Image (cartoon, rainbow, N blue to C red):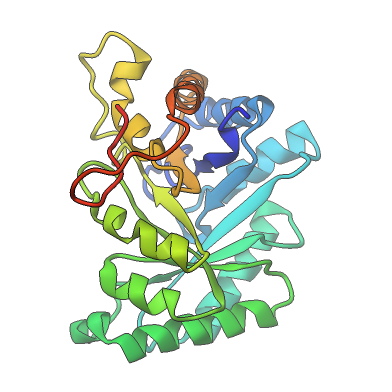
Length: 271
C-alpha cells in the first residue's frame, strides 16, 4: 500500500482560472500528469472556478486512466434554487471534463449567498438542504454518491442524519482542526471523511525548512489519523507533487499499527 489512494488532486488554483486568471498553466498541467503517472486516482474540481479545462486537457493527453474518480463541488445558498444549481454543476462538469458520470457531488452551502444567517445553525434547514440536494443529484442519473462539504459542527450533525450523504468533507489543517472532534462520530456513522486543504492553501508551508518533510509537516499531521479517508490538496508543479507523494508514503510507513488515544480522547498526531 502506497497511501496514494488517500490523495486527491485539488484543482482550484493549479492553473489559470477565476481565482488566478494570469497564472502560467504549464507547471500545473505537468503537475496533474505527474500525479496521475504516480498513481493518484481522485480529482476534485469546481465547475465555476474555470480550471476544469486543464483537467480535460491532461486527460485527453494521457488517455484513459483506470480507476480515476471525479469529485465535483456544487454550491447553493440555503433555501436557494438547489435544482438549478446542482443541475448546472453536473452539466458544466460533465461537459468541461469530458466525462459521462461523476463519482460524487460535494454539496456545499454557499455562505455568501445565504440571506438569513440564522439558517446556518437550523438543523431542519440544513437537513432539507442535504436531502433535497441529494434527490436532485441522484435524479440526474449521472452521480455515484453525494458528499456534504461542512463549514462547522451544525452541518456535520445534519449531514450525518441523512442516509443519502455518504461522506463529509471539510477544511482540515492545523489552523482549522475542528473536524478532529467529529471523526469518531463520522466513522461510527459509517461515513467517510475528506480533509480539504491540509496546507491551508500554502500558508502552513515552512519556507525555512531544509527538507520536504519539514516544509510539509502539516500534511503529515493531516494524514496521521486513519479515519481521514482522503486528503484534497492542490499541487501546482511536478516538484510539489513529488514532495507531497514522498510525504504521503513516509507517513504511511511511519504510522503505528494501532491509533494512540490521548487523555482527551483524541488520537495523538504522529509528527
